[in-house]
Image 1 (cartoon, each protein chain N blue to C red):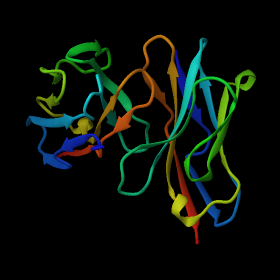
Image 2 (image 1 turned 90 degrees about the horizontal axis):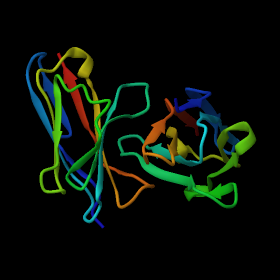
Image 3 (image 1 turned 180 degrees about the horizontal axis):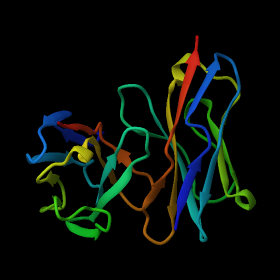
Length: 112
Length: 113
C-alpha cells in the first residue's frame, strides 16, 4: 500500500513570497489533515478535511494560509505572503476513519 | 482545553537500559491515546494506540504503554532499548468529539551504543 505522498520535500523562499505544498493521501482515506510542526514542538493542526469539505480550520491563519481539496483526494496548502515565523515542517496525514492517522514525509519550509 | 505534557524533552540511555517516557493529558471526556515515533530522516509512524479494553497496550518493536485513567497518564515503556530506538517520540490524545489529535512536544531519545 502506497503511503501519503508530499512534495516538495524542501523549499526555501524569501519573506513575502508565496509557496504551495501538495499532498496525495492514501487511496480511500476520506479524512486529510495538514499540520505545522515548528522545531522542538509537536505538530499543530492547521486544517482537517472530510472528503472535500472542511471539518475544522480554526487554527489556520486565514489571512495568509489557504488550503483546498477539490475532488476529495489531493490537497494543496498555500502560504501567501510568507513570514519568517512560517519556517517549519508542514505535515500531511490521512485517515480512513476517526482514529489512526498516517503521515507523509513532510515539507521543510525555510523562510529567509 | 485539551493538552498533552511529555515530561522529558531529551533522554539519553545506554543500550540494554530500561525506558519509560512520561505522558500526561488533560481532557474531561473519553480519550483515545497514541504514541508516534519519528526515526531520523523518516516520517511519523504509529508505535501503539489505546482505544478501549486492556489498559496495557503492546506496540511494535517491543514497546508497550499503560493507560492509568486515575492519573491521566499513558507512559511508554521498553524493558531493554537498542541503538535503533534512537528517535523522537510523541504522545497524542484524541477526544471523542472531533477526532483530532492533540500532541505533546515530543521526547528525543538517544541510545548510546
